Image 1: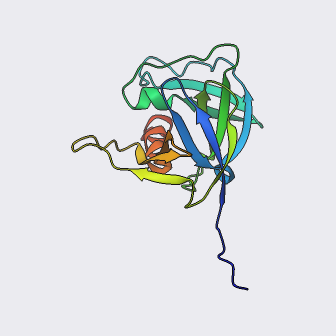
Image 2: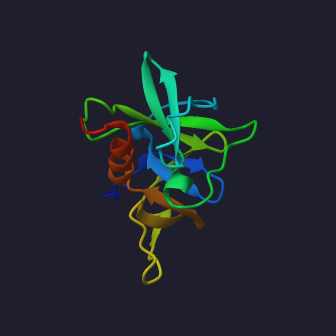
Length: 159
């Protein structure tokens, strides 16, 4: 008997103020309670919320919505900081804190429950790798390389 192999990616659905992000579980290092980051200074963009001490290092904390030009939504009582593994291998940036509205939910993603959604003409956002519907609900797969590039522009100043 020949059975088709269904490939799944263990993922997390991340609640933001206006949307949900979809990421593979492997890029998430930790989820912690929301703490107010230490401000980075006046020259930083509004989406760059500052730094938090985490595992003996100062980790940058950002707002995805703020990066997209939307209002930076500070979470309420259920807010969290999602700690992402930086994938670029830069010595000054191993993790990025992302402000989220509540605890992310685990999701199993396969070809059977996710559909790509094509954006309207002229609606391409460099921070969005793909818009999708997961189990008929909208979600965004962010471009982690672009997020990391923008954070690096702020945290690594030319000498």
